[in-house]
Image (cartoon, rainbow, N blue to C red; front, side):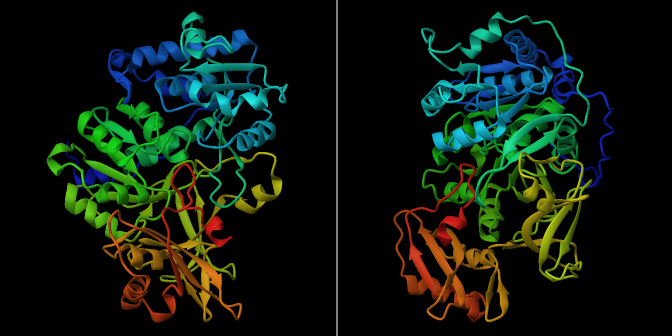
Amino acid sequence: MQHSQAQLNQTPPLVEIPRAYNAAYDLLMRHGERAHKTAFIDGQSGRGLTYGQLTDQSWRFANALRAQGLKPESRVMLCMLDTPEWVVAFLGCMLAGVVPIATNTLLTSKDFDYMLRDSRAQGLFVSHALLPSFEPLLAELPAIDTVWVAGAPEDFTAYPRLEAKIAAADPKPQCHPTCSDDICFWLYSSGSTGSPKGTVHLHSHLIQTAELYGRGVLGIEANDVVYSAAKLFFAYGLGNALTFPLCVGATTVLWPARPTAGDVFRILTEYKPTIFYGVPTLYAGLLADPERPKRQALHLRRCTSAGEALPAEIGKRWQAEYGVEILDGIGSTEMLHIFLSNRPGEVRYGTTGKPVPGYEVRLVGDDGEICGVGELGELQISGPSAALMYWNNRAKTKATFAGEWTRSGDKYSRDEDGYYTYGGRSDDMLKVGGIYVSPFEVEASLMSHDAVLEAAVVGHADTDGLIKPKAFVVLKPGVQTRVEDLQAHVKSQLAPYKYPRWLELVSDLPKTATGKIQRFKLRS
């Protein structure tokens, strides 16, 4: 599948969305001629769902919600493993005007309790394997009067089986008359910087990200097969594995469990995806896998990375080994998907590329002035997929959503060619001797050492109370090296004041379920 550079560089127009609009209806009604084409495959079981079955089951789910008494605009929590039923439930909720809250499946009962109380959800759709985390809570949450369980055995009777509810429901198409600015779904922030926040998105947002990034940058097409290591509950994964393929009629491979390197390579070789969406930590793990397959066993034409900035060394090694560029980009829960990205054929590793067409970005210095070329400032974004607000949190809403601009909390600089380079989080930036030091720059230097698998750098106070870099490093399996050698390696690449004064070798780094390193835990 070939694309000319002219095609890839075309700027897609903003989608003209009518006021009367339902995102699920739009995504499903595009595929009348694809009724028999596979839309989703459960990679573990091999079970598939065609576009015709997906549409039928989504209508049934919407009608089952109505029969249950769930009203339009009511909220329900969707905490399910990545299976075709996740997609049916998400789309079915939107068809009925019910607001699904896509929830991280790897959290604790305490986290779920907080989110259920914060959102005041009236229903819960949960995978059987995840039910034990919720059962202690349900008796204390009388507002939840609907609990359906997915993937339960046939003889399960504690709660209604979600699959049985779908099968028994009326298949008649009945779409609630939502508008483009109606609340469509929520995502809770990943918690990489503290307490999660209920991030509220509109019906218009899904299709804007699909058109502007999915088609405009990624170039996804109907004959693509896609696999996203990022889960559906993650903003990055939701676009990757649901919105983008449904926009064009592609096929998606889902994987219910947390993917190991072996799992990912099995998917890439058995199902032959043409598009793979990963995160930096996973790419590093794949390249470190001694059982990794040869280039000829894969059929990839596009690879992407998000979640954290991709170290240049990882991108170069992946491309050298598998012959496919990694399009590194940055998105956020607040903006729903990637708004700044490298483009096919124009990748500069070590940068996050240029703004996605349809989005504007600016860099603002500590003095409130717009930064010039080479100056470090906070990245702010304006675009059509910015969240409406954080639920029940007016102070943080006002701090993040400033008129047309959304504050990312990320520090960036821009070079003379318009490429943006990550400089760390605003609250991660270090001032050493009065000079800003980017933790990511130090991490990238450490990652270029042959022995290093992962690295994270935070600020740490010395005996004089002055902040200096401190590094936490995970070595590759079976590899040994000295702390002093790693420090010397950084000194050989960066200005001397940037090297980590302290360096700890650790077995792993604390991360969110979506793979982001939780630096606030390392700082504490």
